[in-house]
Picture 1 (cartoon, one colour):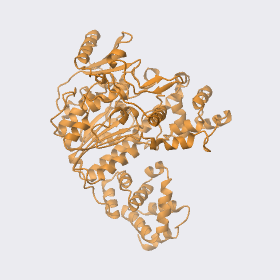
Picture 2: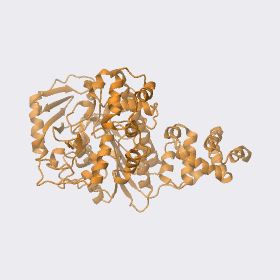
Picture 3: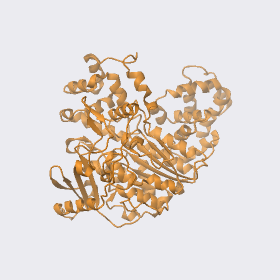
Picture 4: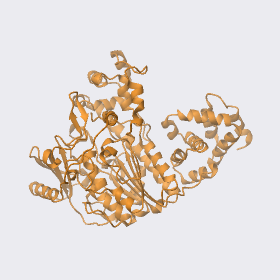
Amino acid sequence: MSDSAARPLAHAAGRHDALETLRMGVQRARSMVDKLRVLADTGRDAPALSQEVARALMSAPEKDVMLDDALRLIKTWSCQAQGRAAERDYYLHAFPLASDRAQIRTALGIAPCRGAEEVVILLTVDCMRGDRLSCNGYHRPLTPAADALAAEGINFPRAYSTAGQTAQSFPAIMLSNFFQSFGTTRSVPDHLTSLPEVMSRNGYHTVGINAANPHVSHFYGYDRGFDEFEDFLGPENFDHVRETFADDSPRRLQKPTNDELMALFEDCQAHPDIYDLLRETVGKEGLPLVRTIAARARFYPYDAADIVKGALARLLQDGAGPKRFLWLHLMDLHENITVPWSPIGSFTMVQQFFLNSLLASPAGLEALRPYAEKYVDLYDSAVAYVDANVQVLRNFLADAGLWKRSLLCVTADHGQELLERGVFGHGYDRLAEGVIHVPLVFSGGLAGRLARSDSDRAVSALDIAPTILDLCGVTDAPRTFLGTTLTDACPRPVYGQTFYDGADNRCGDGNGRAFELKPFPAPVKECCKEMTFCIRGDYQVVHDGGTGATEAHRLRSAGPPGAEAPPDIETLRRETQAYLDSVYVPPEGSEVCGLSASEERVLTARLEDLGYL
């Protein structure tokens, strides 16, 4: 592009529409080389415009940036100029073509990542169903990145969690053990060794970034073994709560009027019966409408992009050693879902609030089922958003020359029921297939030892940590690990359990429900009701110790029905209980974790946001 072609951009310096002026100039350029020349000329000849653009980008919606190639290129250029390397690399690696990314790096003078030599990433997505991966047969093309990882590596389409709720399912992922082994404590007990502890003692710099899920936070000991750990649950992360919702705050609003509520949901074409439900929901505990919307819109905004940017920052840093282990936990699929953008279409803030509010009342679910079914579309849009962020990670590792020395594992702690059996969500007393069937993909050069021909067997979340250690050449797996590396192709039953009726982290406080970290009065296996399951072949047998009921279900994830006969449910029930009893070693004593007043406020606010309180 000639100097004269770039000259009109310089004259726009200081104008309110500086960003749009530059965007149009970049968009008019035909090739990536020409687009980059426009940016170079602007930076040299119009520094005032560059500053205006940087300010405008601060408030530009993420949806606009991610869905507009010109804006995304400008964002990359602006981040480079301001020295924001992690953000720069996030937007750079959102470009799908490696050739475009190479030209951008050259033009902007971006040096390749030199700090790491081997990278292991465990990416867990809260509430992600295994049947949402296109490579697992879903009819919507939501997951091109995960599908590509599966094609390069290995996909286990029949992977299952050990429980239906984070506090009880995560011990399988991080500790290769069951929640029953926690005994009387709610926190990670000292007698169990975690995956990051093993990686750390084998020379890996360990980083954990958790998108503010309290159940796997430092309060529960999940920071153990990490050199760096961030869960966004410090008091500093909630300063805005006091500012916005204090009684004397000028920003505090009163409860909405009837007219305000009707106007708010007008564009949702709400069923007449929904009015009372929503009026009750938004007025819950006397909170103003703005607070409820703020919570639904993640006033605690730690979405996938924030977590991935944090991961890139750690991978770019020098001095952390040649080997890196990162655990990233995403919350974008957890109710209440608020998607900043999605490749398959986005929902407005009001629409998202409307759909999330439906889940607040069981009565509303059946009365408004046609509207509730739209929640599935919202869930799917969040799956596609998460997948786009997985692609950013994959592109970064490839461009840095690390892919052949990387391991990327994508999985979930549990799934989510989406109107199966007439219910939404997940919980302590649920072991249905929609809740326990999870994705499990291993990819990268270090995944090469996994045999694809054996991937159709049922596997357990207990096997994730042993497999990661094996693929990394780590031989000192703890004796407390109950899983087996998936390089061993021998099929095994999958066992799971959950405790309810007192096993959660809430207790009555006279005004509803409050957060609790006190130990159980006795080992959880003795003081709570237990549900167990076993998966053998195509069938799942579930036993509820509270009611005495035992049921067998053929799993949809097992594929088309074959000749396999239903199992003897009583035999499998006894086998399951015998196995769980055989691996149960109750710890001695109880470990108590106390909360300060500020910590209790932080956890209460976040748990309210997630719908637990």
